[in-house]
Image (cartoon, rainbow, N blue to C red; front, side, top):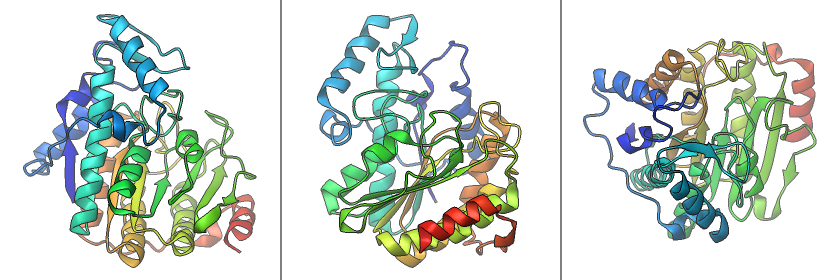
Length: 333
């Protein structure tokens, strides 16, 4: 698996007390460096305005530039919502989006897998506003840029604890979205009625979960059942994973009661779908995950599962609670 990492992503909010801290990517990078995984890391680059504006409005991009420039050595909220930024945030956000693009291009061209270790995260960022720790929607920008270059249909797979409202809002026209998430946790979207068949075989699929204590086996079993059938329906050329690991038991911002080791099972399910439908093409883009040790271990589990071509786990579908079983039947029939 190829890794994309750039130290500039760690400069956002340095010295600002906040769960979305530089330590998140620095700890992941240190762990991967110890394992030798960063020796051949792909270089990142800045996303251009034209690439960012495939997802975000020109007015929003200008707003971020203006408001970040006004902060200098201080920190404050973007006027669009609950995203804290400082003087380094625009630089980090451009580099995060560009790293996701670089990873998507490499995975697509090489029929392989890549992981972009980036921050700030992205899946809450809508076309005209940042929210929920997010400035630019890295996964969506990578998908739209790849689509503009190759015409690739993309399925964004989001297993973060929180619903990716920003990604859902830009789905369609060759971009599909499937998510599990704690509900009605922040941002309060992605309810059971937010499931849509879109034109040209695109889809928006949401399976909301109880906000705490869902458990490891039902979580893995749900994805084992859900992902192959959605991929078969939308026929993607590329998978992009909004890889948030705040579902892990004990995460201070999320916590679905899921073991750290589940990341390996999820990666095996994703890899199987990528091999079946996309010639192995998959990009992971880091989203949430605020228990630093669990985050670093989860990323390593994903890398190891892809490198070993781990088999799809033997997770029992009978462990999925009846509420989610009923929703799956409605979605998948």
